[in-house]
Length: 550
Image 1 (cartoon, rainbow, N blue to C red):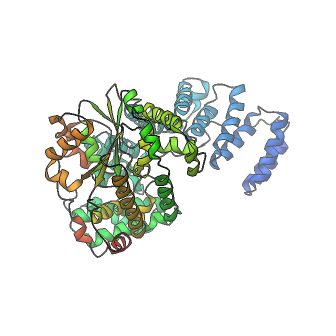
Image 2: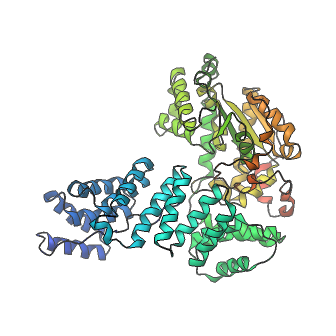
Image 3: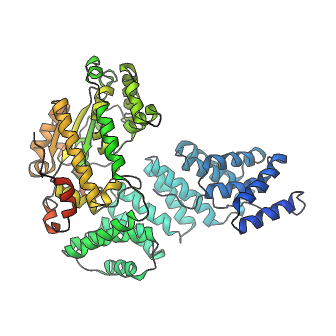
């Protein structure tokens, strides 16, 4: 979930008229107003050299540093404020913001809660309700980032109660409810957010993805009018473009739908630099790091010793992986954790910034990394012995996973390539992920490399990777599920077929689809857009096109 209003000045206070540093502070403020921040920083730091706990100067530096994204430095100045006033709501809140910016969510939650605990004090009673709502909102977002969705919902509801005009709180509430499978409530919240702020693109996209468009209704017309108006910020316009594409596709206007999808992808790419060559190079580096002798030396892997069998679902996006995960997670012995970055986090930490450094690791290092991986993914498994990790990009490190956790089960989800390309192009993914999908040629190049790598693993590690085709799963779910479960080492359970009844949080772009029984309407949908998808086909095809079955 997104986090807004970083470093907002909540009851920050002002320097006193008798402050001996008053003239210097006035001069620094003038530099700030002129945009000369370096000069302002210099004056503020001179003051702190003499008076380290000067409240107003620390507050100014905290504000400037958080705006610049320098969270570590800002946190130090918050600590200076808290030394003299441990209950300062501004310092507690901005320190929490800094921890959030550094992805230290546990400490962020602790400091937001401390700030909220001061609402009944003298300073807290002086805060506006809207300022209190902001703190509840930020805490709700962090609970969401930490997968604590019930807590997130409570905090966001509180934010909306304190500030009934807070469109952002209603929008995030809608997203939380979507992830929890509470569709009707999500729609209500998204509509409320749009009512309060019609320019909020995230709310329009959330609503569009929760509802089925049966006619060209007023909500679609309003989105189109906003999109054409020139009033929306670029990020909001991007969100609305994808929402309109979904609506027009469901209404059968495929030409207009693809035009919207293309515009959404173009707008997204206009603000994010991306080089496909770097991704292709990293995939090849990871492939070459596999050492068969290390895997063979680990006859009993960390997975078996820990009593946990990790099940890795890999592949390209939009291949039915969320559907498979939901089916498997409906089994009594399986816990699904969604998309975990545990494997890549461990690999990058061990590589110290250069993946090639992994070549110096020995068998004991890989064994230890495997144990750390299992500890991370099984943290909330509730004692269930099988844990599903649906980080699709783990296809890049299948060989390394063999060295880390030889007992892992790898399932490669496949689907007709043209349907994959279309489905990826229709969706805006989480920022920083799948940047290749916003350009059809880039996506085609990555898909080709993925196919090559999977062909290599089939040859190098025969029998270790199970290939599951989406079309087969849709055509005969029970047959395919029985086969997959047998590969994993589990008996079939009927609950896996009624997966759409299973209550669990789902955060992928498929969150609405996997809460319905199996349907076939998306199979071969690419034929509606065959002409428009040619850039992908040319980049991917080369001299051959289709599944790698061998």
